[in-house]
Length: 295
Image (cartoon, rainbow, N blue to C red):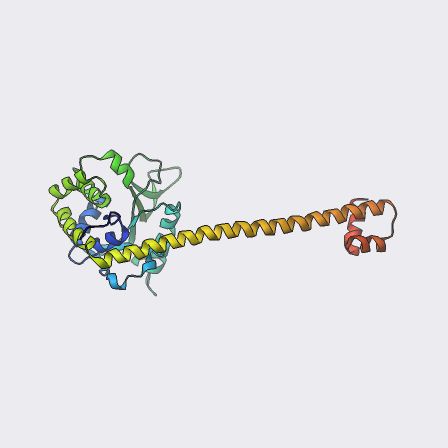
């Protein structure tokens, strides 16, 4: 059964199912070791995803991978295909959410695991030349002094990788060539040079031939489109409503300014306050203020 063109390993449905599968821990360990430059001695991946139980709208939460490394580091890996212009804020918000929920009742702050967030993006968001960027929180004056060591953000931008790497020699380059899956020659080189990538390729072929996977992707693509369309309609309605409200407010302000101007002219002509109030609709207090300010 032929694969759909959009079901590449960087498709988040495929990505999570491929790398959260029982028996594929070694693949993740190699990616984490190469990407984070840490030695992975023990790895625990969150429970394998069951397609039949995955909700189509999980897209609007997050389809990420949570991995506990060496018992004291939580690694969050997310694949993002579409640029919604909010990646850095989302990453920060999500990291804070994980930090807040990771500490159980009566536990001390020492129990909080370090959090490393790996964001693999199918678009560019940073002005740096490197396709892989890691960030830390440092002192504004002494840049080498790291203030907070418990959280790091990694951004891997696939378009930059595609431009810069043509011969995937390192293990990280081989994995990114496979995940990106745009340059078939690079994919074949990665498969030939890395036995774990070759294993991932077999699992990938199985996943993309699975009817349930394809159907889930179709439903989620429809949900993404529907949400985007609803958002666009919401913006149009919001603009229309804003225009109506603005016009009404402008009219009210204009009418009031007209009444004030009329009242001032009537005051200048020594017309009684009672008559001015009846003609303009302004109350006694408003007229007294006008008398002090304008006349």
